[in-house]
Structures are given as structure tokens and as C-alpha cells.
Image (cartoon, rainbow, N blue to C red; front, side):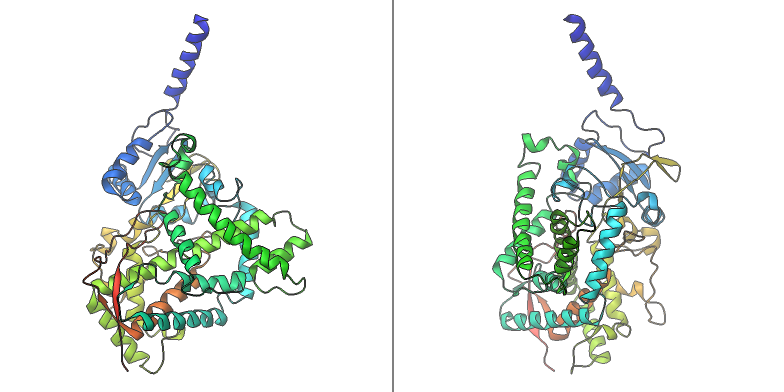
Length: 492
């Protein structure tokens, strides 16, 4: 018995020692503890700094442009600066998506959807989704018309409500979602739909529960049994259950009215593909996961960007005035700006870019995974390693931008007043094959909602409400903190 106990203790000690040894040529980073790795140190820094991407920034200042940590059971490498970020985002070996408890929880314990899937499955599902979204207007004139309809409805609501300050941090949620939802599900929601607003609030909250590496749930999944509230498990499951119920209702209604020869929207097209039974990757779970991915993506980043655009216009009224003066000169007061005006509204475009650069909505992009052992500069990244790309470091590069903390739209204009963008240092949608799928929709939404708002209203701070803040809530994406604005109608 003594021999057996000694053997067990020796094996445990050996495991604990081996668990602290870093892989050969692994990127530099702090020493890690057995089992938890750098998790405790990361959480300590996070409690002090408040933002995940700034904790990673602090590590980069200590260890360089490629930093290697171990978070729980996961190897996590983060890269910083334009060169390293572009290297990762344009190399096929890093095109994988992370695997693990957190990433599978949202898709029924499987690797489904299009955001966190990869390989042939992802290629097939992405191709199908893009093809059919285009059939229903994505990237075409019909998409612009849908956005214009939504902007008019939203502005009409604002005009009815503008006698009092309006909460603006989530004001665009339903309208932005409606554009995508029309192509996905063939319907739109009322802007004042209370059930949907509550659901979108839950989605916003979910994005703040964790970070792009998967957080505590992915790093130490056993915590869901020990501290389900503290690790966010209960809150996340609550969000997912509500989302699944909502999407299941929509899909069930489509099944009841499905026509085998005519698809009204993406859900119809997917159900038709399932009925043919020619491809096993088209399943009920995949349809739910695809809808979940598109719903959450379509209701989060663009809405947050528009919320921040109002914050910046309130904080920099001189910029707001220059945008309105340019629109009045180029477009006039007899009609609203259209996408065709973008090429002429150069200062306005520069302002939109500067807001994206400065707000850094997705500060770490979407996590990647090394699909095999791979060399990155002088380091070796083991297969399966989660790789984070700090878009924040690209947009806040002191050497390139000189004064990155300053809000200065003119940095995107050359001496002749024309737009000038170095895409190596401006990448809000990423690079490479995994570049944001909805980029064209996001850009169109951003431009048309922003210009419609400033065409119709002067924006002023609400002195009796919370101060609009340039720094938002931390999470997978950065979201604006609650604030109100006074919308003063512009008379012709």
C-alpha cells in the first residue's frame, strides 16, 4: 500500500512538473502553473486593467509581438502589430477556428455554424450561405433598398420621440438586424418589438460574458460544476436557450409553409437542401447554428459601431458639423444620401473610418487555430493552439499613426483631400479567407444609417443623463455604455 501511495504521489508530482514545461520554441511569455497555466495571472491583470485586449497589450510590451501563454488547458498565442497580424490572417495554416467546450456549447456540443467551424465543412456552408443570401439581395441593389427602408422607419420613430432625449447605445439594434433578417427569414420586426429588444439586450450581455479565447468556460470547463454563476455558464446557457427557442419558432413556421420549388429566403433554401438529402452536413442542428451565427453577428458589431458613432459626434461637435456641411454641399437638403454618394463624401468616409479605428469594436478579431505545427517568425506554434490577432495593436500603432489616441479623421485624407488608406494598418474586417463575411452589408448599413441620422438631426448631449464615453464595455466586442442624446430636427 505504501508503495502504491508513493507511486501515485510521484506520478502526480511528475505530471505537475511536466505540465509547467513549455513546448519547444514556443513564443515568449510568463512562466505558467500546472493545470491552470497563466489563468490566475491573467485574471489578476484583468481585474486591474478592465479590458482583455489591454491585458494582452501589456504582455506584448513585456515579451514582444508574439506572446505565448497557457490558459487552463489551452495554449494561446497572441500576435501584435501589422506585420504579425497580417502574417497570421493570410496564412492557410492559421485558418482554423478554436475547438473546446465554450465553442461547442452554442452549437449543441458539435462544431457547426460558420463562425467557429473550419475545413471543408466551413467552405461548403459558407459558399451555400453567400450564394443564397445574394439571391435574396445581399451585396446587390435590393440590399441598399432594404437599408434605406429601415433608415426611413428609424428616422420616423426618432422624429416622434425627439421631444425628449433618446437612449442611443442600442437605438440601431432592431433596424440593423432587420436588413439581414429579411434575407434570412423573409420578414422584419417592428422597431418597438419589446420581445426582440429584450432578446437583443440578452445578446449584448452574452458578448460581455466572455472573451475571444473562450474565457473561463473553455479554459477550465469543470468550473461549470463548481461555480456555474461565477464562470458565466448559467448566464450563457440562459441566453442560448432563449435564442434557440426564438429561432426554432421561426424555422418551424417556415416548415409549415415551405414550397419545394420556390425559396423565399435563406431558411427556405436550407430546408429545401435538407429535403433533397444529398449532403449530410445540412441538418436541423446546422440550420439552427447558422441562424444563430448570422443573428448574433448581424445584431452586434454594426449596431455597436453606430452607437459609438453617435458618441463621437457628441464628443466632437465640430466634426459633426463638418460632416453635415459636406452632405449639404454634395447631396443637398432635398434628398437623403445614398451609397452612390459615398465616393464624393470623402470627409464623411474618413470620419466613419476613424470611428472604426479608434473604437476598435473587435479588438482581438475572431480567434484562429493552428491547423498543424507551424513556424511563425522564429517560433513554433503547436497544432491546436488558439491564435489571437490584436487588431487593436494595428489600429493604435504609434509608429504609423503618430497620435493614435487622438480622434482625427483627416488622417485618412491626403493633401488633395482624397481618401488614402493603408489597409495593412486599417483592418476592421480582418484579412484573408476568414475576412468578415458580412463586410459589404456592414459598410452599407454603417454609411446609410449614419448619414441618415446626421442629415435629419443635430446631435447634442443630454446634460441630465450619463456622459457618453469613448471607452465601452469589455467583451468579445466592445460595446457602448448607456447614454442618451438630444436629436434636434434639421429644418430645410
